[in-house]
Image 1 (cartoon, rainbow, N blue to C red):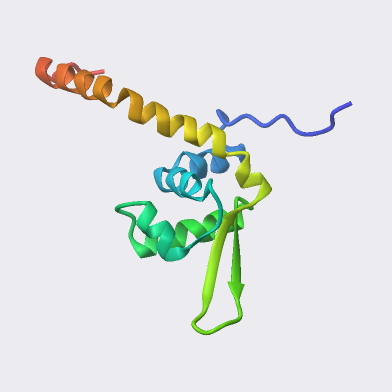
Image 2 (spheres, rainbow, N blue to C red):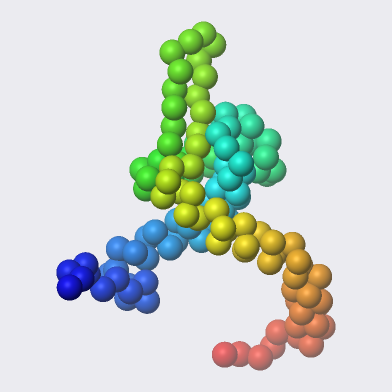
Length: 127
């Protein structure tokens, strides 16, 4: 018999909703994709994830470490060296987030065409 609770991200009070929000964050997805091939230093992640600020990267890495998705290893040397890697839990995100990245790259022309068509017809329709 399974005694685990029945989580439901559609329920506003369900704690799984915060995990979904973290994973669905654009910076999280790109950081996980960047770390998919192995550990990287902060600067390497920043170069791989074009457009992310140092503060946002640091905050996101801290959040991912707290959630058990990323591990941080600090080496006792001069100059200081810190590396980030996906944990076993983080590894489970590689495939779904890579698939989302591939989908975005494959279908961007369709998305842009849909946006243009929507914009051309006007957005005066109220919901």
